[in-house]
Length: 212
View 1 (tube, one colour):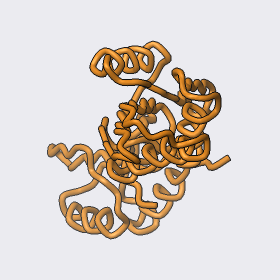
View 2: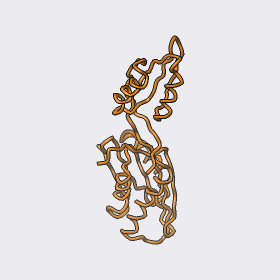
View 3: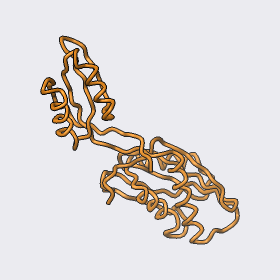
View 4: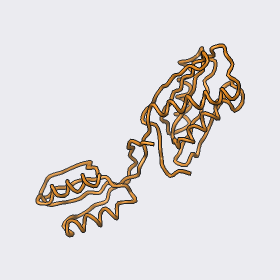
């Protein structure tokens, strides 16, 4: 299983027409089955005249909860392709509802599988992804004489500054990936000849843009 924790950047809607049938994919971030079901219900309510509102969702860092529904389409031709696409893209805490307005031309089992899975895939590509990364706040106390040098170091090492406070010295709160905290502190200690002091804050999950 891929260790990356990915999800969609934002809620999103995508539509395409396949052999006169409209396929509309509605994507949303969710954190519980109740949230997923509420979103599914809202899409169904907004598309009461649709022939089908098929869906799938994944919840949890390790896909602890996975559900799918064909919603009247032949078994295995809608819900499962939607779920398979979410899993293939390694998306967590996402619900996808694909609404179909039948256009009069039957697609067959293979055509339905491609249509439902493909619509979700195109929607995901359009909205973009973010990666969830566990980071810790590291509060660094630095003298004014070393302040600019520290800022340069942080910029060169792609370390974000969440807060900056000025007093007798300067305190910068930087965000460091949890697995890199010890190495970062050691490197800073070496670079600044043990002139910095550090406090470790609580871990927090952040989202950063992810490129495939």
